[in-house]
Image 1 (tube, helix red, strand yellow):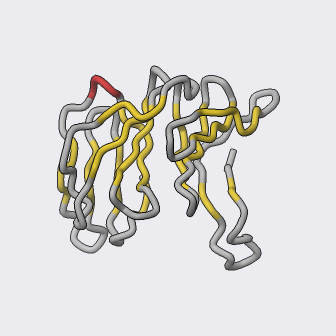
Image 2: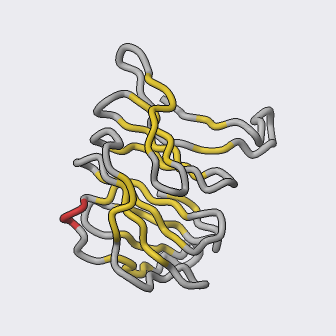
Length: 150
């Protein structure tokens, strides 16, 4: 679940992606029955024109074009492959690079805006990234640092 740029919550629940109004609890189904791709994590491009989601299996990242209301305007398309196997976090930096925390390979992957995948960090032992977030610059969290909780 992430807080979108519109102040709404976005949840990927393995079969659908929904938007939830935190004030009213109203749910809007954005992508229904995409269980074939097992959506697990979701985020948006810096220009808010693309919604990305990672999967529960298969190591694939999908891209969905969205309008100014963040409503999908097309079907999900395969954006990147070979990104681990079980995504547990998806962060996006101001340059449009995606960072994907993966449980299966205990790794953090970086994907460029062109879809080029590289290993960014490999955790040791039983550690792995459970989420990905950029710092806020508040309370000691640097705004130019990527935080990957475990």
